[in-house]
Length: 279
Image (cartoon, rainbow, N blue to C red; front, side, top):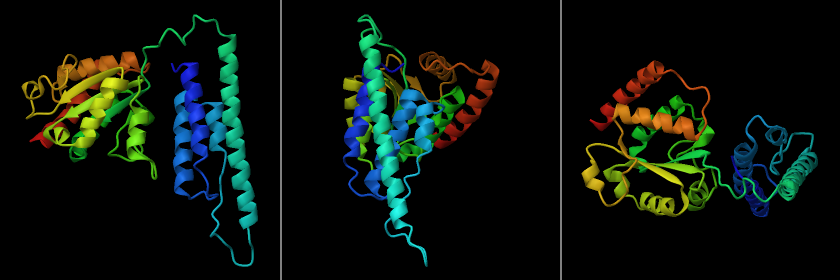
């Protein structure tokens, strides 16, 4: 569960980022980047079935100044719709912040603001771009366990990573938080990537938990002393993957867990593909 203070911080960030939208155009890169950030933030705070997210989804933001129709000019109407929807969204975010601030004032001092929740909201997969094929199978494992796509951050695949126009390093910094479980996909490619090493450094400072996943032919001895391996596993170790499943189910409070036999059958099909990729 996200604390009220964190919710307020995330919503205030949306207001700050809205100031970067200086072009009134629904196709503008800065606008699209901000809109995507709003969507992810509302899902993170309220969920994709919430009234807040529903209200956001109903906004149209339809305006492109170069559009025209023979015999008719709808530009003025489109601009009016864009401005109205933009204003509505800003006012809504300000309202959500006020509501959360009122909740804080009415909540006793001994609250969840002080007693930190141990639950996670997202898995961040730190990996080298050259290992995308293997990482795709890791995503398949996570979704088989029960995570939704919006709970997985991975820069190599559309829908899991960085939107068009977003700042690459800033986005990574935003995603590696105390509410992120970081999975390191450790290969020779990983250690050759400056971005991966940067993510590793940020994880030590910001993330609450990390799990090294070693991909053969790399072995534990190859990375001893570089990264703590107390919770590490080899990617093709079926028993350790069972433990990973249990950990994720517990930390993310996954309710609709599948039976062990169903999981092992699906896990083994993914492991066959992983072993083929490693070979």
